Length: 153
Image (cartoon, rainbow, N blue to C red; front, top):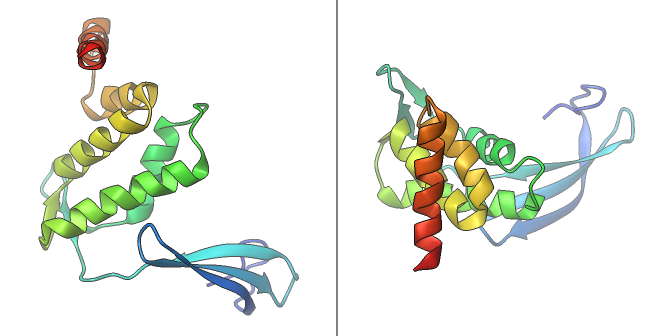
């Protein structure tokens, strides 16, 4: 791991903590080159998981992409960084619990949508509009009406 500030490969661990939400380890590091501190996370990879994209291409699953998608959908919403990390951890756990060697990207998208629906309705609509490739205002309206109907039950 290189320092994100000066790219030095030398660092020391100042603090380590387990993160209960997904059995990962949070490490606080100090660069031996520039003395700045930064945080890293370590995750256990049970087995390599391949994502089958729409075009049939297979790529290795990257948890950071799920987290980034959730973060973008939640941009300027009252959702904390911890809530975003928890949501990404829940999606990752659901994927692992399937016990498959491969998963379709559409299935990951559905899991992210389900998680965002519970977390923040506006973030859910944002993600859905890109994921489902909404073409016009009518598609937005029908999705919003469906959300409204679910809440009134």
